[in-house]
Image (cartoon, helix red, strand yellow):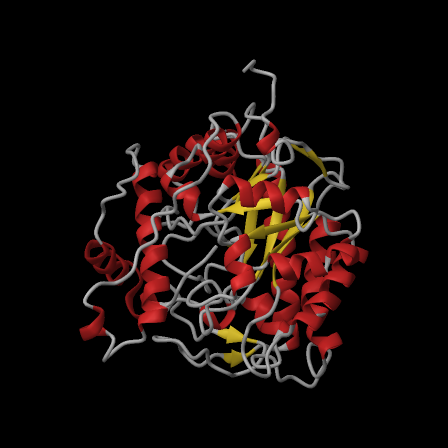
Amino acid sequence: MSATQVPTSVAHLSSPLALRNGQTLPNRLMKSALSESLGAPDCGPSPELERLYARWATGGFGLVVTGNVMVDRRHRGEPGNVVIEDDRHIDGLRAWAQTFRGSGTPLWMQVNHPGRQANALVTKLRPVAPSAIGARVPGAVRPRALEDSEIRDIIERYATAASVAEAAGFDGVQLHGAHGYLITQFLSPLSNQRDDAWGGDAERRRTFVIEVLRAVRSAVRPDFAVGIKLNSADFQRGGFTEDESRDVVRELVAEGIDLIEISGGSYEKPAMLGAVRASTAAREAYFLEYAASVRELAGAVPIAVTGGFRTTAAMEAAVASAECDLVGLGRPAAVAPDVPRRVLEQGADAVRAGDVRVGLRSVLGKVIDLRQVDGALDLSWHTDQLHRLGAGREPDLDRSWARALVAMGLHNGPAAFRSKRG
């Protein structure tokens, strides 16, 4: 086969994708956000972070999205988060972005505020949230409700982070509106029970995310990409629904969003664990059916789906059918930083993820919720792989669940037993 010939089995995955801000992605495989926990003690980027991203820069992705960068050092999701409040770390951020110069792959920074999911090991203040309602997860602290002025300050913090990311040389930002973080907390009636301009009905609950998008857009150039990772639903009774999510998509598109990545669930109700419907299992992706349902609403805005993809055939079929425009790969990128090259150039028919579950299930299952621990352990195991890559080593697919469990507890304290996701 010649170097320029594209196998028919990956013809759609190999095709470029133009965004409406003028940016073009070279193919349809996206490295979805993974929380690396590799920030320096002063909350700036580290050499280990640069080393990790240098590996992904040569991996052949169409787009790479960083792990969540916090907008307020007083409220962080976990130890090792990078924080942008101003340009104090601009040199380190430039070095991080520079790892992708000349790669042909755009690098976007995911920006985030944890809200009530702030980690007690690194957040000494009481967590904040739309309402004073705690998350039902181990180690969670009941938050206090944000004042109007504080909400507006946080919105400006998102804009500042995006502006600094642009100045550092990143190609775009992704707002984290999934997995129970602050944007999600505003969207869900279970965590937002305000009766002012920021809550009270579905329209007012989505005001926060729309104002964040507007502030970010006004702070960056038109050709700087702004995307979002959005929950399809939070999968809890009385919570954020798919119909409400579709309304959010409609407004985001009208406001000029460049890319929507679909995910779902929260720390309280992880959506990518446990039993799935037969139709989901057959097509591998967890949120593909929902993504297809918003395809018409999104219009020219591409839809990415992350979670569950493992075979090249399923990835190619999802893009070929236009159910989604991009396939997000998270955990596979932790164990094979060159996974797109394996799929698009070397003919790999499947990708590995290294799924891990806690052992001693008959014993531990009597005292802990194995479903939550499995999710946290699996993500911790993959974070260990990222740390190996950041140290200049190769992934260790034989790393035991017990070693990952100990590392998880030491790193995160009580918050370890949440299934952290980027």
